[in-house]
Length: 473
Image (cartoon, rainbow, N blue to C red):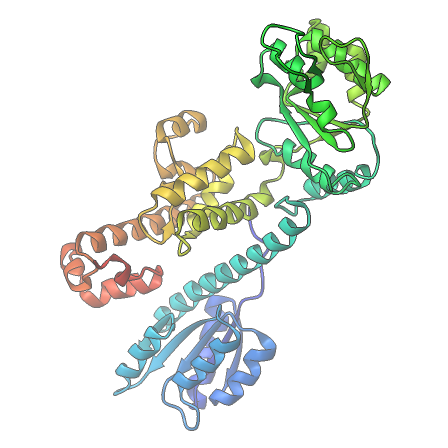
């Protein structure tokens, strides 16, 4: 899935007009960005407030407001913008201070145009990712508060609209869908939007109970009705009187109980075991199943008349493969949920990890995705969840995808150039994490182990958003 292309905006701030003209020409041509320029920090702030740039490229030493003060004021109203510092002789200490306060990168003048272009490209990607995360969070809060559902796909919105229209009625509803698609959540939303919401919804897991126990639990019994019945007991239908009952996985109900259930739906009354009288009940019945009821009817395993009584209105929950655009929203929702539960609020997804989630087949649907995120939060070593953290049982994933084991399976369906870039990016992040872990966050020692200059390693660390201090004891 490719995101919709957005205009990339860069603001260049420098008191030297020649430098502004040069940078505007280079960045616009080689980065494909829309570029605005400003000759002072105050002028740049005025532009940034109304124009919202993705990247700000600023000199440090300027008359009036210097680059450090400008960035501090910029980040007061936009914490997602990525800033790159340009420094001249004698301002390296100021540049280092700017990096500590949140600047993305810095360059000494004079610099090579290609390096600036590469840094701007990376900074734009960083800003867009940060802003997408903010948007995802806001959408999550809005949707979850309203319905308990997370997602904004057309199919999900159609389901929510149908549930809202069904909620005020007493009509029996059959909710169908694969395992893990949120059938129980749909039933709960239906109940919560109804005029029965002030009473507790009763949920019955039909396959979990043996036939005799299920019958007595549903309809109740009179003292002495069977061995061990030492008192009268109200059944779940009587308990749900005036409310809603969910018969989860109804396809597994034995035929003998199907007959009694049909009477409840037709006559609106129950007869407890061992009783000769019946009791009227006002219960809204919702049933769910992941099985093909039509096939079970043909095999004589499900009553056709009960099927038509249950299937007054059918709601079909979409599989995750049918709503791929909701995967990032769901993943972010589960990440926030389990970060809070496990005390790991600092965790975020690496961009490649989200791409991996989009390409992975989710045979267990939302439930499988939820379990995958829970496991990743528990086992992730750093502050970024990587594709490797999402693999789980790699041998099983390899069999499902038909590809080689490991994180490479996430990239196999991309065009060659994109796949190569993502694999290289993932490799570099993993490599940096490994050598920084080995050297307890000591950048000089890590550079020696990696056979590179300290400055070269620092550039890689900044480029890929790795924090060396997080690897220190």
